[in-house]
Image (tube, rainbow, N blue to C red):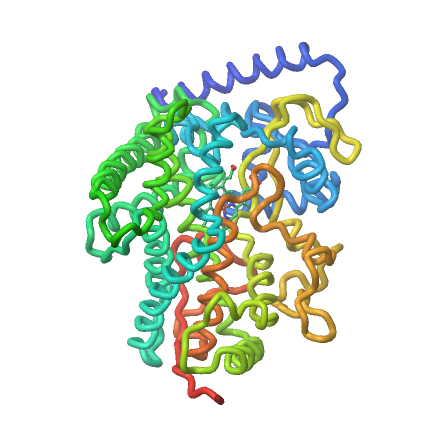
Length: 507
Ligand code: HEM
C-alpha cells in the first residue's frame, strides 16, 4: 500500500475514534437538524464540489434555515433565511464576529497565522487595521473625489480597449481584470502598472492562484482537515508554499514602491496611498501590529479580496447584459438624458440615475460572487431562530440562497433591475424588503471592507459602458442562468465572448 493511502486510512481511524470520544463527551446535547452523511467522511462527497451553496439550498428545503453538516470531524452550521442571517449577523453580531481559525491550515499559512483582516480573530488589532483601511477606502469627502478620479482614468482605458475591438467578438475578461486590478494598485500604491510590469504580473498570478487554491472543496482542501497530510500530498502543499513565496516577493516590491518618498505627490499634497497609511500607523506609538500584518492585509485583504470579487461581478454583468437589449436600452436612455455624450459619467450623477443604480443592485443579487462569504464562529452557545448553535462551530452564511430564495424573490433566476424600483421608476428605499434582503457584502461587524469602493467602481463602469456601447453576444456563449454556471466557467476562466458595438447617441 502506498504511503499516501496509508496516511489517509490512518487519519480516518483517528477521526473515527475522536468522533466516538466527542459523542461520549457531548452526551445528550440537543442536535441541530443535520443532513445524514457517511461514516468518517461525513457529508464530504454529498456536497456539489464547485457549487456547495446549491447543495445547501436543497438541504435547507428539508432541514430548515438553520442546519448542520459534517466534513470529516468538522461541524459546519449553515444559515439560509433572511431571518436567520439577520439575527446572527446583525442582532447577535458581536457573538458571530469571530472567525474560526482552526478550520483552515492553508489559510493560516498564507496569512501568517491569520494576520489579515478577513481571517483575523475579532480582537483590537483587527479593529485597528480595519479602521485604518476604512479611513482610506471609505473615501469620505475628498477621498471620494480621489477614487472617482482613479476610476475614471481606468475606465477611459477600458473604453479604449473596447473601442479597439470594433465589432469583433472578444473575451472581455482581461480588459475588465486589468482595469479592476489597476484601480486597486492606484488606491494601494498610488499608480497604475503596465501588464508587463513585474509587480503587476505577480499580483495577477497571486490573485489567480488564490482563487483556484481556496475554492471551498477544491484540490488541497483536505490539508485543512488533516494538516499533516502535507507530508504526503506534496503537490497540494507546494501550491500553497508557492503562493506564500509569491506573497513575500510582492510585499518586497510593494515596500520598494512605497518607500520612494513623495513619488507622485506634488507640493504638500497628502500621501493618499493605502499602503502608506498602513505603514504610518505601524510606526505610531503603541501600535499593536507588525509588518507581517501589513503584508497579509495588502496582499490578501486588498489585492485578492478587492480584485477577484469585482472583476467576477463585472464579467457576469457583460455576459448577462449582452442577452438583455431591453435593459441596455433603458440604461442608455438614462445616461443619455442625465450625462449626454460630451463628458464622462461622474459619481455626482448617481442620485439622478435610479435605473443604473437598480441594475447595480440587481447585479449584486444575481451574481452573488461571494456565495458563502467568510466563515463565522460563535464564542459561546448562541440561539438563532430557536436553534442552539454550539460555541466554536464553523458557521457559513448562504448569501446565494438569501439572494435566490424562491419563497421571497419573484423569478430569482431572471435579471430584473425593476425589482429595486417603485411604480414611479424611483429607487426603492433602503428599508424596502427587497433592499433588506440584499446583503452581497455581508452585514454586522464583519461587513466587507471594500463595499463603497466596489459599488463606486461598478456603478461607473455600468454607466460608462452604456454611454458608449451596445453589448451583443459574441461567438462563444456561456450560460447566464446562475444555476447553470460551474463555479469557474464564468468566474475563473470566463469562456464567453461579447461584441461591443459603438453607439450613436440620441443627444
Ligand atoms: C463586488 C465586490 C465585493 C463583494 C460582493 C464582496 C463581498 C464580501 C463578503 C460577502 C464578505 C464577507 C462577509 C462575512 O464574513 O459574512 C466580504 C468581506 C471582506 N471584503 Fe469584500 N466584497 C467585495 C469587494 C471587496 C473589495 C473591493 C475589498 C477591498 C478593497 C474587499 C475586502 C474585504 C475584506 C477585507 C473583508 C473581510 C472583513 C472582515 O472580516 O472584517 N471586498 N466581502
